[in-house]
Length: 621
Image 1 (cartoon, rainbow, N blue to C red):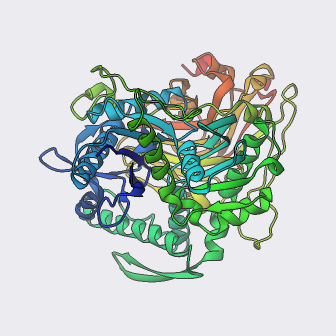
Image 2 (image 1 turned 180 degrees about the horizontal axis):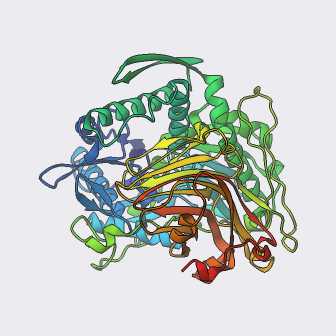
């Protein structure tokens, strides 16, 4: 029997569906319909995926990889118990296992395979994703974006009328995508510029809930040492509890968590209202992105027939509430929105399987994969030099419509708490020809910036969240101590490289006007212990665009225990190769040695490069 196979290799879960003469249906991949997107590196070198990997990884979390889809394209490999793997190799292991499992269930291999990827990914990420089916020995697989697959399923399920317009709002485990589509006889036509947020999804809601739990327990969770095998198991169990609590709060008004701390079990009640307050600013960012996508198509919300919600995180009750309130259009949520993308991919795969030659629906972008042997390194193809490199933060360029809106952003208020009808925070934009100061961190994260740490524990990054705290082996952050004006007290332990950075989660923005305005990266810092080894300050954009300056001498020259204000001309970074038209990471501090400092009041200030106290670029070499 000829059938098409659609696979959604999600950040947190993987789903598969088949489509043939009898219709389209999901395929159960393990204990449930979907399977966790995790990979366990066994001692003998085998890669185990899915539910089995999750089970064996509970007692040995150092060998378990999760969230690696976010790392795709990062030149720094993931190290699992001493062995290095590229994200593409781990995704390929998942894909290979899914295809083998479905082939056994269906009594033969599929006639065609269609994979999905986020619409927000740029050419660089797409190029690396193209390597995944090649590494899985599936050179004929094709790729469509997740919103397009979701809309294809929607069109089959609800029979859209010719010319009808829909917006796809796809909030998954790791990314958010929006696309405007017009129904055509041959498929779906994309209108305007698809937009999304690279690092926003269910994983970030999990981290927000974990930070809330940690704050309620007076830092007992962040105090756990992930390098200790026993506490690492406890920490993994607590993270799993937070994931389950997030899901339960979609159907229950509150949940009781029993936290397995080494000192004894602690009980904690979390309500849905509390959870809503944690994630409301992030959901507001998604509705802003959809507004931009609608505008880029030359449309108004009233032009839409409906907003289609896809992705598992769209099941959170706050999401359809805020989307409905923001657009005033019918909001369509399937019975199982996390299946929508896989079902749509299967529908595309069936059209490919039953056509000769294969012809995808009009408007669905596909990629035929080469059969060549060059590409991303696998587990055995990572050199020692590559392992030593720190990551480049990979966020694709924002849509052109978004760039026009964010040439200059001033301070915004990040609200936490409040009632269900509380006003969303606003962003004030200045004129591109007369840029105003951009606040990046001001006692708390300034929307749309997020404070994040990264290290070999998790180069994908751990957001500090409302607790302003996070801990990894090489780096930890906690709220600043008295006298440091609510800064971020950051400690590098010397047990490996680590970095603190502030990233615009919407993607890159055009900051050219700030170079012309002789702007400077300005921040307050209290050095508690000067850096012991080479330390750098960076400003990044879409890979490979990045720039860093040597800051070891700078920090070593500041008075210990006293607040200092540092001003680094933006031109110091553009001289090092930064493309100011696509900045997404506005401040990054990196070192592999011992360093202790508190950072506060991070901003980009026009004219500050001409301040007599500004640091000379020649002093940062």
